[in-house]
Image 1 (spheres, one colour):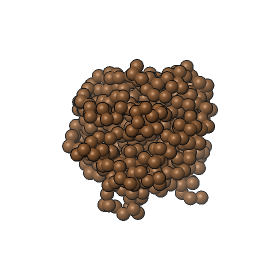
Image 2: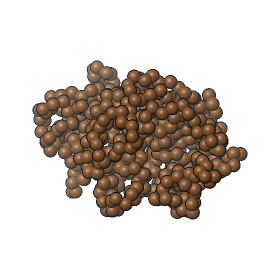
Image 3: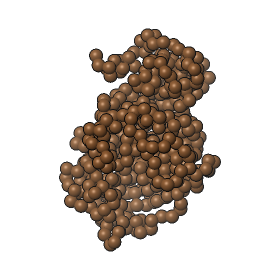
Image 4: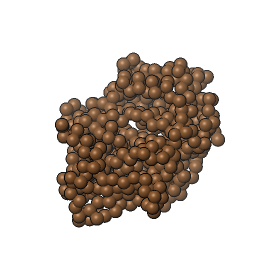
Length: 493
């Protein structure tokens, strides 16, 4: 049995937890809060991490209840917080009831964690499902006020689309201080996550709802592509060592199932989660398997490499997986949880059309393969939700973006950042919007997107804050858009 197999087996057998010491800890180990994730109709993942635990292994008791006073216990047990996994705990609770709220907590070393609330997925199509999606929370760029508002929303779920941490400093603005320097090692990544997770607003949002998570680039390194770093500062072997450390830290700090546990620099993140045949979330990984960014990797004209048939965003196996999953999906709405902007966006520089090579615009044939499939197979109501871009964009997805009359095969809601980029402003790139008529909305304020989904209608609210440079900002809906079931394309509400 390998060490990894031992850890997996040990975590899967709570009865063995008695072999680990029940110790008295020197301080509160639950300062990073609690979280839940990847809900199914009868199960959910519960997460915590013991902060400052020095023991090789610590026994952690947990319980989940049907009420916030823990009078009606639905399940309880023990797990091991092992040093090899940063004293993180991932409990996969089974035998729950569908579409129910549950409350949970952990106990270790004589201390009790904060109480979290989670919710199982429906097994039958619900009349309504509400969720929000978020991304890009650079700690030093601003306060996480958006998360405080999110925690007060009436939601079933939060989806995080990447850039949960930033591996180094970006931009001149520093609103809040954190550890200086770029992170490379497992201990450095752990320290960066711990600092981000200390934020009370982020903890409140984690404790309020279950989350579905997928990373983008900054959880590892800016603009990395597969095994290729942004610059040549590291050899491929050194970069894969860095990626292995980053992936392990990501697993340790996220409410993920054991099936996502990384094996060195490899981590299975693409997956499907179903919610009562109303919504299937097809969670993509557009970093681990992609080709290198073409045409120099910056904003540029689309060179030959950007148009090459072998240029891939998801890799062949994931491309087949998403097409098979969409073809067989019984859901009314099919959500592609995606990291980088899928809609084409060009702007003129010196009279020449230029595109961002890190987005799907640098992977033209990969996007064409996906859109041709959507046109041919006609999966029910494809909606793409996207992070990364630090601004709100709402767009129709066209078979041919250069022909406004071309067939619409889906809709993309790209959400703005939680804090990355600072306060923002109310300006809009009018030249870009005029040149790209499939883009229906843009906002350069921080916030999130809230979606209300029924069998007949999808409503997306672009929520914004006036500032993040200081705490206490109010939130408002800047614009709302609807998609009618069976009618591709977005309309202003």
